[in-house]
Length: 361
Ligand SMILES: Cc1cc2nc3c(=O)[nH]c(=O)nc-3n(C[C@H](O)[C@H](O)[C@H](O)COP(=O)(O)OP(=O)(O)OC[C@H]3O[C@@H](n4cnc5c(N)ncnc54)[C@H](O)[C@@H]3O)c2cc1C
Image (cartoon, rainbow, N blue to C red; front, side, top):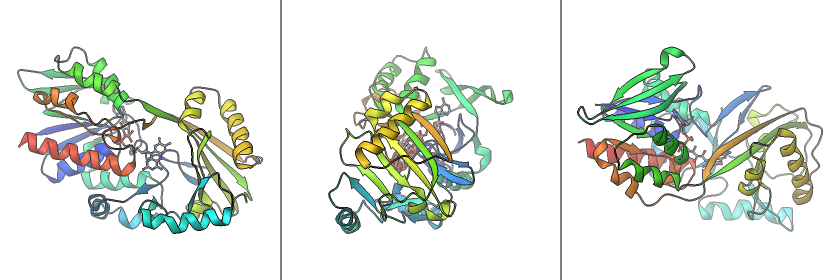
């Protein structure tokens, strides 16, 4: 049985891995060159930078054993410094609180992990297990078409490499994209059987927060000593997350230098999306000064990454849209079906593989 999985983020790769292990023939189609989706790592100026997800949790036995199974567990480490909520009255007390309260909650330092070589390490480990030949990169799925007589899907694709453009056939399709992109794919695929309108409506109802991320390098950044990252305690602060890479993953930063990652919170990101870089930089300068009393130093370099679909605003718990298309050999996974985190993307990929195994069996 041939299964086409659209999207090589963690959800899609997890589904591909689980189904391959069970003897299904899977092919993963990914529009980008890199794997991992929002677990995105880029090399810049000799530094390995995570532009998307900053860390992940391991709270379920399923994820822990998966990480071991795919050989990723040996490549991960807890954040090397604590995450502190801001604003706070007293730095020493806030640091003590961050280190003390965390393990009891089971979510905080040292229960946040990163990979030595960046977040894409997990996607690479899974891809090795699945086999590179099953993963087609730079292959954008333009549309899908259902052949009712043959009960098969045709996937119309286009790639940078023109030989990848064309049609691929599959018995099953798994949509492993953020909900808005899955809805756009269904829209481009018109006409589809009537029940797909219900699935498309459900996918369109999921709002995603954008995230504008600024990463820069400066010498001797000494603000908030001992703090690995600051996380806003309330949503009205423009900066949601501010991390020092040389503190949370010191083995990755050039010695004697600071690499700082700022993520704007959803409301500020929405205002900055599609704006020129200078505007984001100005907003960063103002917010650092007003809320954190940090003066933006002279930058050696700077990178800005805009994510249109960074994290789902809410989880899609009503699966009636998926049930409506139960006759058509289609499944879906992605963080919007769980709770918008790395670990939950994994869980949703696994759940889709389980549902498909049950339905195909
Ligand atoms: C800035 C940012 C910070 C974050 N921070 C954290 C964090 O610290 N901790 C945490 O746990 N989570 C974090 N997250 C969330 C986490 O990254 C996601 O929940 C998780 O990676 C989602 O995985 P996914 O497989 O569901 O989707 P994705 O990773 O988005 O994968 C979808 C894939 O589909 C591909 N695709 C899209 N359209 C097509 C098409 N038509 N054809 C082919 N391929 C297509 C995309 O290129 C992508 O590779 C963050 C996300 C962002 C953006």
